[in-house]
Image 1: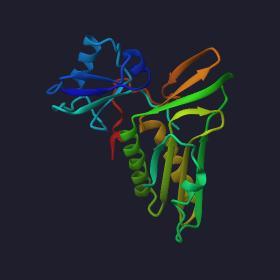
Image 2: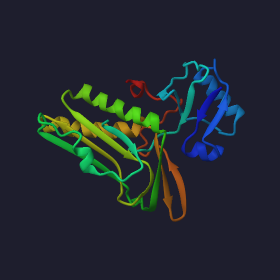
Image 3: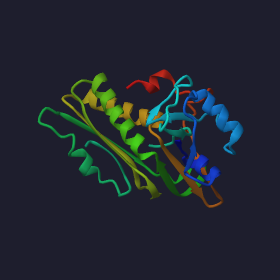
Image 4: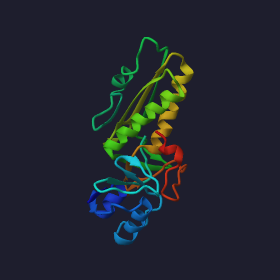
Length: 77
Length: 154
């Protein structure tokens, strides 16, 4: 099972700060498509994906127990 | 630990002392504060949220990058999260170096980099609404959802 962390507007939209889904074996690109079609998060254009606290590229393959985070455009500072 | 994500008010003196050294002839500090007016719209207060574990790692990565680009600098960065009022300090960066050019340049680099790669978000609260703000500068599009390669370099 993978934990998917949500922040900022995505968290409010989902009404929760985490999703639990088994997405191991998928690439980040496949995860993105899956979330867009199977959840109510809507378009993930512009949202970065981090795996285990590091930014991941579309080709990265997700392993079991990886912690995934959806990172909207940042606005710190 | 020279970087931190904190819920407490930032005290610039505490950050400054982390970088003071006998070798340093210059210390620059940058203090980012909550602005009341943005494009004529009045902010009541801000709310900052972070992916704390990753944000801390990214702040530390920025310090490593600074030391690679400007050997001899020392840096400390604190970012506050939670509810902040007008003029509260949201971020403070202190950089020391033997001579002043490096301290100025590295400090500027740090704040620009924070706005690119550190997972922290702010929500503006106005009199007539609220909104999570993304990418204030309009410099990053991430059209494919992929950060640029430079943003991934450690």
